[in-house]
Each structure stands twice: as structure tokens, then as C-alpha cells.
Image 1 (cartoon, rainbow, N blue to C red):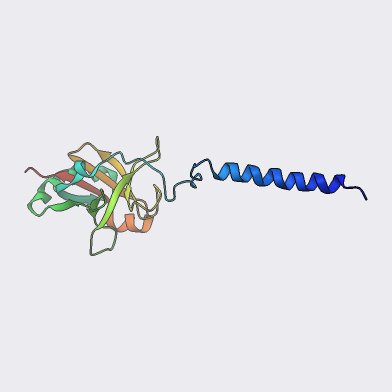
Image 2 (image 1 turned 180 degrees about the horizontal axis):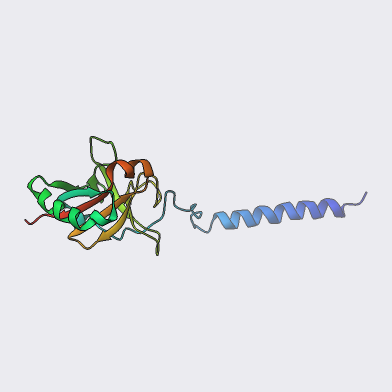
Length: 160
């Protein structure tokens, strides 16, 4: 009877066990999986948008300048954007009676959106940031049906 194949098998099993034990005793934690959820930057912060805004909307681009003036007049009854509890800011989503915490989101160098933090940039419920300079914010709904009802939203920061 030839013992060589049996010895080789026993040696391989022993060597494998020794290697596994050595790896387990290095004290290194196993590498975690990639982070869950969408990965994006937030180019517009809550500090930049929290406050009182005049609000108006238009459906035709040629009405944009006139709508900006109407939004200024909207400061008599301002749209208030408050800080959220998780670092975002509170705004109403389409057809919602309560505000939701939203964030700005972008996958550089693409467009910037405002929407729910757990959805990727450009989700159907998002609004694209057409213009933002700290004093004027113009947002366009991505959902075509919602956009047809609400138009392009123009927010003008109210004087304090």
C-alpha cells in the first residue's frame, strides 16, 4: 500500500488549517462591503437655503423674468424653509401636505437636484436646480406630469 498520496493529503489539510489560523489571528477586521445607499455630493447646504422665500412659478420660459418679480411680492406670505433633523432642509414634495427633509445632490460634474436623500440624483421626485445664487433659486420638477401642473418654481429670498 502506497502511503505517499495519504501523506500529501494530510500535509495539505494541515497547511491549510495553519494558514487559516494565521489569517484569523492578525487582528484585522474583515473588510466591509461597499457603503449602501446612493453616493453623491451636496453642493447646496441647508445653511444656504434655510429662511423665508417669496415663491411663484411659470410654465413658459418667456415668463421667467416676470415670475421673479411676482416671487418678490410673495414675501408678504413667505414660503419658509426650515432645517431638517438629519442635516437637510424641509420642503414640500409634489402633492404632499407635510414638508419632507430633502438635500441637494449631485454626481459631479452633472446637474444638481433637490430631493429625498435616500434616492439617487435625478429621481422622479427630484427637482433640478436651474439657478441658485443664494438669493434666487429656480427649480424644475423632473416628473413631467408634476411639472405640467406646478411649473418651474422661482424662489426669491425675502429681506430680513
